[in-house]
Image 1: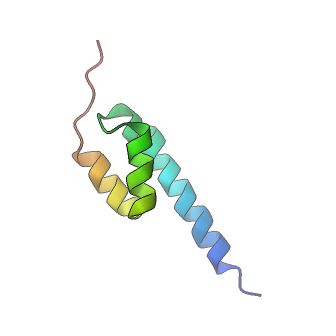
Image 2 (image 1 turned 180 degrees about the vertical axis):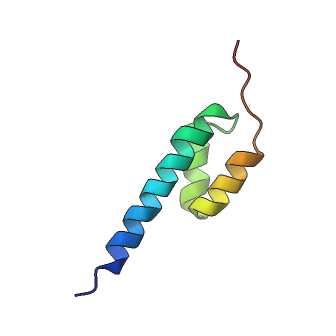
Length: 59
């Protein structure tokens, strides 16, 4: 049987989580919107949108 789709789906989910948690949480876009764009487009598009967002200012 061909289980390549399971591997691709797992990689997709892991990349989306990494982008959202480690990069998106430190930016104005936030965790939730980072996940949204990563799932809607692709992890690469989500990464680009997240990187283009401004960093949050810690006080």
